[in-house]
Image 1 (cartoon, rainbow, N blue to C red):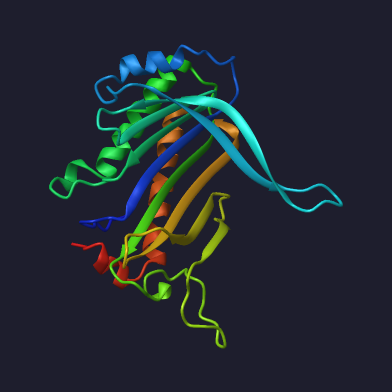
Image 2: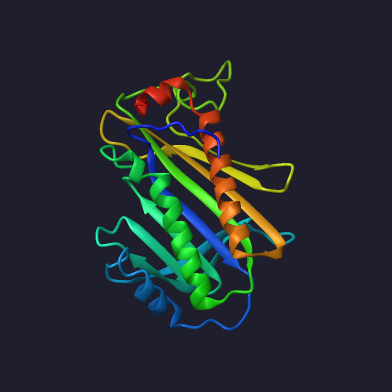
Length: 256
């Protein structure tokens, strides 16, 4: 990976790494319990059940677009004692989560990506031993950033280079905004960048910057290949993040 820029107060609300496996044998409901027994030192909290609902915009010919909700099987979550680190397990899917604080300012060498990467590796290797999947066909790494600015009115473009352009003839003040762009690398990897206004404390302004990097393949990837891919996706995510923020944002994050 390329050299990373470290921030004392990174804006990361949640970092997620997800692996989707080739459908193989039928789902074994004992897998979450087996994983918990092997990962109990890191995830000693009470397991939780979370329903997975996907929202899709679609339409049929001659009818207006509408939202469709797809209810999926519940995903079991293994949780750390403080509730800030999680592993999600469901049929042919594994996810690893790190909630704020992503990085410990007093111990940056043992936190952030230096903590997240081993958690990803340990969870995936353990899942592989317990579930024996056919292989991985989808891998994603996603960073959800919340940028909070201690002012009651700001120009978004001063903090995000990907912000909506200023249009001559329209009011200068922006009350709220939302945008989503799906990019494609030459090798087929996708980068989905979402941004928009979010709630913030009084006399503050909040922006969401959501960067999701996705690898998909019809071929089954091995364990070693999956671990290589996740590092590459993380590298692309960091480059994308540094590309879209401004120096004013960097000062806000208190870069070293």
